[in-house]
Length: 237
Image (cartoon, rainbow, N blue to C red; front, side, top):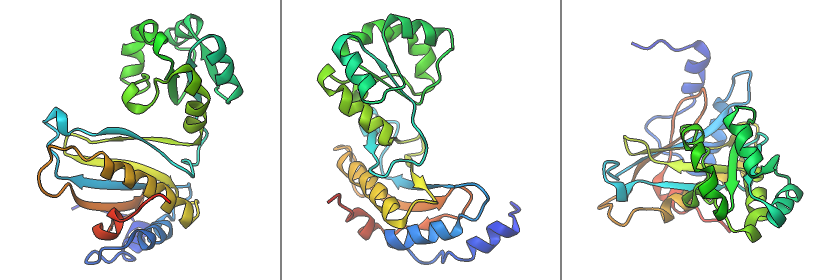
């Protein structure tokens, strides 16, 4: 039997396991259960009816969080010319082409997300083994390969807060929606953005119910069951 701390037992007692909570109530409860000394992340966990063994049922999308994730995001951009100037003006932390590629190969650059213009993809292909395993390789599917005229917008979106939505091998989607110190309204707006994307990304080949169950939790807190009808009704205004 797994032993839990007195702190965890105390906050777990606040959650009625036989009740499904609407999103606003679940967020309020998640904040109440975040009682550790650090600012816990509030996370969404969704069990789907998809078959992750089927390539056409996998989900990999990027959600933009209107209230961010509560931490600074270091943005790197592979580009050149006017697009490089636009990236710097938009606040990118690193901008370059071959010189930047060499610095990354040498392990001298730390960043959280990378963006590239299409003509750079052939040149950064050699970074695949370095960036691929860290999930940092630019990819058109995640909106990180953009045309030169869209660089400023892409940098602004990345700095605001981007969450990659991916299904794991057990058909579960995990997504952070913000810090427990966020206001309930900010967390609800981020949750709404994530949910709207997941609903829209439902694979056409999934039969029957797509979202089977959903939970909200603070990093060190108990799982809070979400009421599916009200969760699926969330819409960005």
